[in-house]
Image (cartoon, rainbow, N blue to C red; front, side, top):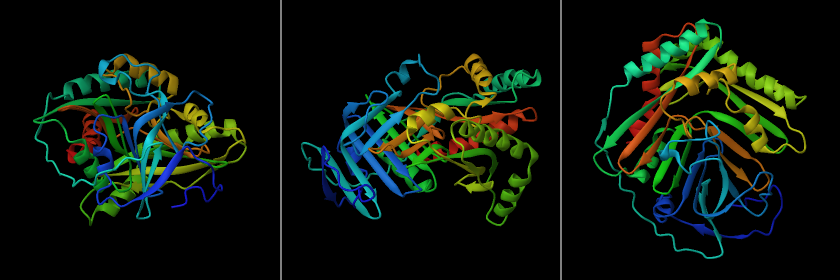
Amino acid sequence: MNYYSLYGEIDLLYQRKEMHLNNALSFWSNFVNEERVLFYNPLERELIMGAKRLKAFQAGESYLQFPYIFSTRTFFPTVKEQKWAGLGNESISFAYYLVEKDGNQTLYYYKDCLDIQDRELESHRHVFEMLADDYEEWQELFNNVQQEILLGKVKKVVISREVKIACDTVVSVESVLNNLLEKNPNCFVFAYCKKGKTFLGATPEILVRKEKEQIISHALAGTIARSEQTQDENQKTLLLNDPKNRHEHQVVLDYIANVMKTYSDEVVVGETTTLTLKNLHHLQTCIKAKANANSPLPDWVARLHPTPALGGYPVRDALEIIARFEKHERGLYAAPIGMINEHGDGVFVAGIRSALIDKNMVYAYAGCGIVEKSACAEEYLESNNKMKSILESL
């Protein structure tokens, strides 16, 4: 794999070595006590794993000679809950990377090459229990938010649930990751492990991509559950023609396009189509812009996060309502999570359909966009469907 063929050969801090692991996740399990990251990009069909923190980057610092930079931001600028302590708001490189693409595996290593042992993946079926029925809490949150909408303070607010799940054993992260990768081939699968805690998920939502001078974002809003095979096409048609979902989608689309037009004279809005996942269909529209010569990807993340698909609209007012009424802290949930190459190109996704794992505890997250005509029970059911990504992976 000639990673630098587009740019020419560059002297790297890293050496490279071909690998032939039967189980790519062996790389993850070879670094049990180290900080680790996993990022699967379905558009490139590329799996990147990093292990052992090497360097944290300051804002604006060059990435040259570092093949992959993992970058995160928390949903809100700060966090208070101990379970989120130390997670997020960093751009870091690792001493070791395993990259799998087009059937080839490449190990990147800084200084010392390790003998990565190929290990058989043990599939683990976790026995777990939901610790509480949270519908009453959801109902209270929904009613408070809808009242703000009816008063005309906002048009949309994205509210979320934190569901506490206790497993009978310490969670096998490798098994969960393998399930996420197998069951969600059209999603970005991510995991970040630090000090014994792992935040992971399978998200369909691209916040922003940068490919040389092109900036690409995706409006993803509007949801319907999948049906039996014979009825599934009808579900797509219903979604495309549903006034509530089209309105919710248009709010997100207009916001992203307007932000892009603020920083670019060339913005193109694509056709609205459906994105099909394992359990759901979503409305999706691609928006492209030509970036200025000096337009770093992290700057675009700051401009676009959070979109109305993740926070609401108007954004600032919706965020204030979320902070006021949600009883849990979002941390990395619905926050920007990305991988950048040394030339500054890369992709950031929204950390949705996700969970924080700490030993035998799983904190699973899902959210829904609430507008004036939303119904509490229907939105709760939709959030259950979104949470299946995590529950099925256990």
